[in-house]
Figure 1: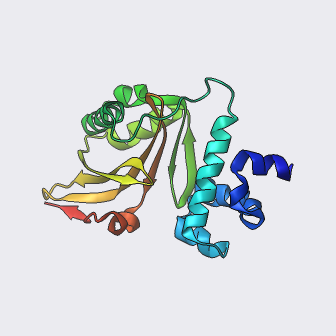
Figure 2: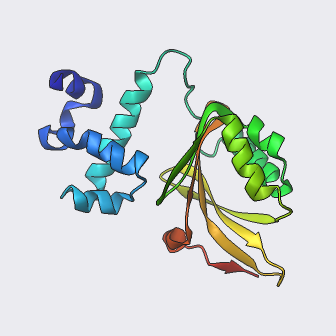
Length: 198
């Protein structure tokens, strides 16, 4: 089993890190810990944690049944930009149907450190209807997170000031969004984003 795992993930990871790959996957992907925290927990480096996570993701992707997921569009490609624009337009206008149309059937929404997740178009659609379908107005500031499309999300207040609600990261698969992860305001500084916009 270990030899097969080495073959799938890559021999250069080394035996010590190889044993940690399931831990890295669980801590980063399931529990939503930041790479710095995982590195500290595993007495490793951030680069090693990110490398293990990327290799594990690649290995898992390779072993999905054919047609299960298409590769994501190239970052900054017209396809990726078009998907981002459609997401922002649907979110800002409260167009739940338009938003749901952009999602893959197995879409996952998470909001670390909150331990709850929403899975599937119907559930995610109902969740977003409760958030953005209430006459609230959002603005987005584009950024990137681990090479993925991301946005600083700001809610317009009655005082005319836009208050940050966190950072939204999109995971793209083919021509759809397979995951949406919203991080709270504590990460804004990591992206150089302010807490309010005039």
